[in-house]
Image (cartoon, rainbow, N blue to C red):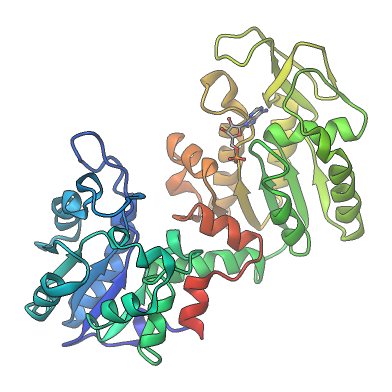
Length: 395
Ligand code: AMP
């Protein structure tokens, strides 16, 4: 696996695919700069080597040129974070880009305009990729967030750099973290899958059952499993067409010596609202008109025990409706348990959408080993798929 550290960038132009698809407010200010900060180490290493950086990214889902999706809005922020005055080209290809690239000196950074202003980007157009490829001596992919897409700048472009392509430091770290869980993880390996639906996690479950020792199931998914086993779940979230699937998963886990841990109690509510009436109930005895919205105290303790014994932990999906404070306690307790295990030497990876939001919201970001920067890309990795952006560098 070639990474940035395999190259010396002295006097070279690095063409870097970054993921600067950051949220902007109505004044076009960056409201979460995590992704820019995450790309900084790669940019700094190249500048310190004595090279220059041509950055390319997408922002949002524009249809042709749309001012609100211009990367011009983030130039100041990127300059601030990198500590270098970043230049900008108002088009990612053509005369303006070419001129800006030619005039770029060692130690300088240029950001090209939104790649998705050209539909060829998403189409994976080879000619478009070849035009971009002219702007660098070495191609660096550091955009994990788009690694699951076979777009021109994320995958197709790599064929123009047969010997001169590599992973940036961020993407390399993502790949290593996933491998630490899925391939080289110290046992016992525990996966926590929460969130809303079994249907959206089934491919992940299928893939990870071969790699883990314990599977903790929580969140809304719980109730499909409990109902499949004959429990009463009241008004809780359920996928009635997945009851057989839940039984199959239980059987498959048993055959593969994976212990499944299901909640034993639940914080139930008489409405899907933060100020609903609540009580703690046996997860198999939820009365009609009540719904389970969080893991109960006995479940929290049971899960914490499993986590405490684990050496490798993967967490995807909250244990309750954490967006409402009344139902956030299960998710917070799990975060505490994972933080504690991490402190004692376990490796913990948090990835995929809402669990990342929860981890940030409750301050666990610095207390786990790694928080993935890619939502869809992370989920597809856990499903065992080869991501085009990664394959293109390895080829
Ligand atoms: P996912 O995107 O599948 O990881 O699902 C995340 C969502 O699941 C969050 O918005 C949670 O509010 C929701 N969730 C977690 N537990 C429950 C539950 N018991 N009932 C309904 N929704 C839940």
